[in-house]
Image 1: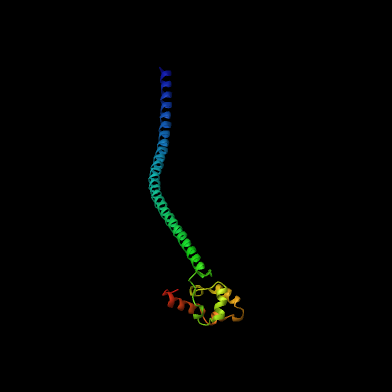
Image 2 (image 1 turned 90 degrees about the vertical axis):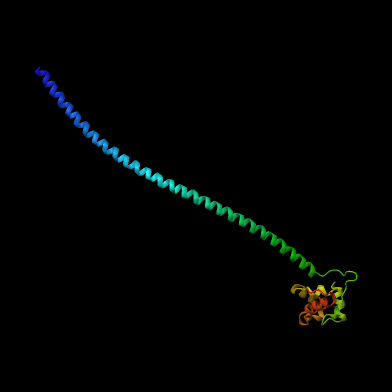
Amino acid sequence: MEPLAGQLAEREQKLREANERLHLFSQEKEGEISTLRARLEDMDALRGVLGERDNQLREWEGRYTSAVRGKNDEVGLLQARIAELEALLKQRAEELEQARRPTAAKPGRKDDLKKIYGVGPVLARMLNKLGIHTFREVALWGDEDIDRVDEQLEHFRGRIRRENWVSSAKEEHFKKYGERL
């Protein structure tokens, strides 16, 4: 029995050593498990923070998208309004240009240009030859028109501005037609 007792003691010793190793291994693994649990809790906390940030980001993105859409709508409206105003401006410029342009005499639509201060019979005939027959035409002259007509009045250059024909033609037009230009 002695050899059995020796074997039993040896096996008990191995069992104790195995239990000690198991205990140490278990403690080591519990430490690792505890560290992993702490990291998992940290990760859960980070997920919560990230979820909140994602929600904030979605909210801000929605606001930004809405604001950009609103601004794009405003820009579109402004561009449409600018196009309208440009078309109106072009139309008015064409109307003004047409009104300033000397027109051919219309039957029954000639004014006595001699009533314009500084215009006598000779100048009235010269203006008629240039296609100018009404107070309105003279009243609507701009600087370019004055320069163009002044060039053609060889011996009378400078008189249009000096004698202020445009202002006088406006007055005569108002007297005859009751319309201010």
